[in-house]
Image (tube, rainbow, N blue to C red; front, side, top):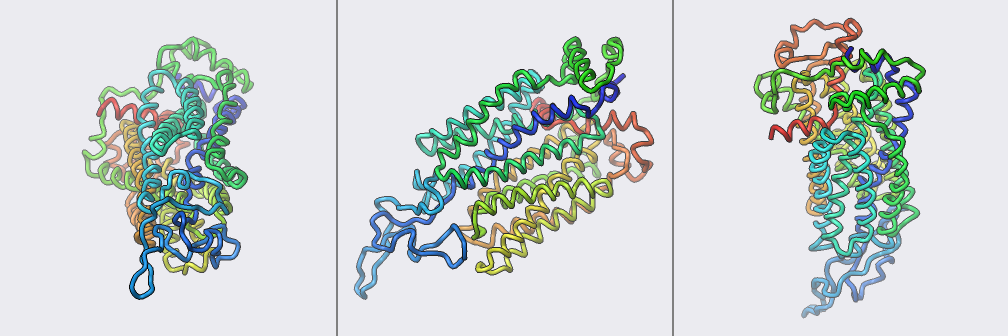
Length: 541
């Protein structure tokens, strides 16, 4: 018997797995907190030079009704005080610091360390360094998990995330703040990877897509909860503490989170694996096959030939599809975080915008569940097109129509969120079994590059207000066109070898149910984790 058959025998998505997914979903809420908190902790409120004779910083309201943001009639980066011959005054750089409005925020990292004017770019640079931490964490914690197990690295990541997250709240200066945020970013990847691994390795093939999206719903919940927390807590240090300290409550995970039975079998710890499988069968009301069958369990995925990332671009069809997928991964993360981190520029209530941006993820992912069985290719292309067109349409809306801008931004977020959900499934079905791990691993690295660039592109808004939206609009449209060049994988057998990919049109199209045993085996690899993929790449680098 192979592991998939044993898993099906004990219940592939029974009570045991559902309880496990509850434990997996809780950290996803904290992930959303840490990923999006900089929208509030790094916000830039209106400000003026300290000692300026201009009107009070809170005195000049915006023309936008109900807005929590307002602008000033004078330059925030210069002080008027040098008289000229024609009774005018010349602006001079602020020499004694700035005074900040406290109407919306009591304090932020910007107000505490004066990250404005000449230092305004430091804020976006800090966000990019945080995103780079996610890339480093993917490689580091991925390698650890293969050696020490998913459970150990998941628990370690949660612990370090909590400790570093709390430490951020006590950062004495901006440099220490950025370093600690970088470390938090690395732990975020450790949690994402290993929670995903643990869930998929305990779940049957038929339920993996649904189970994965359930965890995405938890991320959306955290997205919305953050808006409420930030509304109640306007001091950045207290807010950082509020989103981090509850992580200590997850200490009970030491006793409730199980090992991956599949990992135990792969590492010759068969007695522990049998004990876990027997426990899962008991909770699910099933009977574990005889121990002798489990002892002979074959783990699918071992190959006689070693493949590398070069095999992704060695042959024509594989090269074309790999490059298109890499670009789509890059675009999805670039635009997703570009829109998310740029929510403060929409000109209406920042807290309401944040809540709505989280809420829109729920119908987006639900729609994916409905349309994905019919077509991967058309779904991917259409969702990318929706995201890109919405961003470009925002360029045609005047600034005095903030609610129209917000509506289009939400439509863009809807499209790119749905596209993000599709690309996970689509990528796993396009790459052949022998290089599927490597393919998804490289794809995730391109995605992290998009995450690093998103804050930098948002920073261009201060120089050219249209440029970020042009980039966030045209890149997905190009991706939508390129996606049409990919093959349709719905109800198609998954390719096992690079030769299968090259001869895709000659492969007989038949529903997966025609060969359930083979499909089950192959799809196990289709759901292989980022952690394994990145470890594979790290060894070959």
